[in-house]
Image (tube, rainbow, N blue to C red; front, side, top):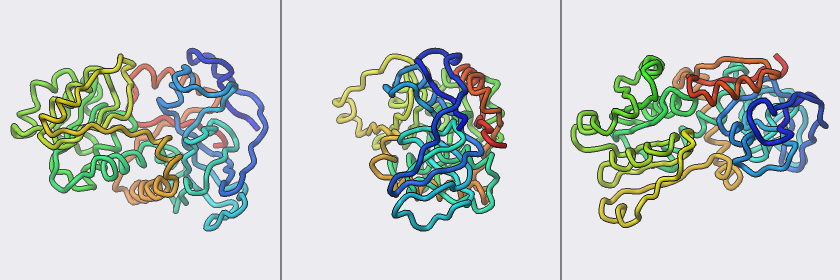
Length: 324
């Protein structure tokens, strides 16, 4: 089959399109004929060697396509059925055939396959982070960094769906403000301006939830912006900045909480729960409750997709057309 591989760690140019053996599903797994594969910062980290994986390695944490074959014991799915799937546990989505746990698969129910490929990672994460990890309650104030990006754009919308009273998004440049406002978010601020505007944006109380995918100074800003009993969720380091030390004693004195979330680790430990969140996400996008902005590029242009993601200038989501 045709696939993009990482033969060595490095810049985007190391990605290679070639032929590899098609995988077969094991017990409890399915194989999928891939139509589209989502392009994510996670795959950039694999390519850079931040995540230690055996080489050559086929990246790709999410796909849409049709069920190709069922492994032993799989029920509730059928060969030929259109699906979206998380391939995040073992990767392999940048290929004509991908294999994943049957628990991490959701029927499309009419959702466009190109849009569906953008749902499994970001939209599923949004529901899990806010509902399962942050334990959002009706009326709470939510801060989302990188709100114009793939996962940020889903978080600001999911927060509203889950009953948030106030949703504030930060962006890295003025050029991205419009993209977040188009999602119905009134309060969009430049990340560097946030410290001086927290009181204004929250009525002087601070945020109940802050979700940070950026890292570096945004970690400190997020913690400082929390109200007592507020929760900060760390789930990325897109800035590539050094880790920011946080004091447990500070959390003790201020009644604040810091949690982490990693979709790959969560999906490996709790595939059924991740799968339920995926089904919820697919349904929300199919109904129009969640909007996903998607741009497709050919699979052979995966390196260019990575360069665009690394530039920090993208909005919405890039997907790679594998069979389209």
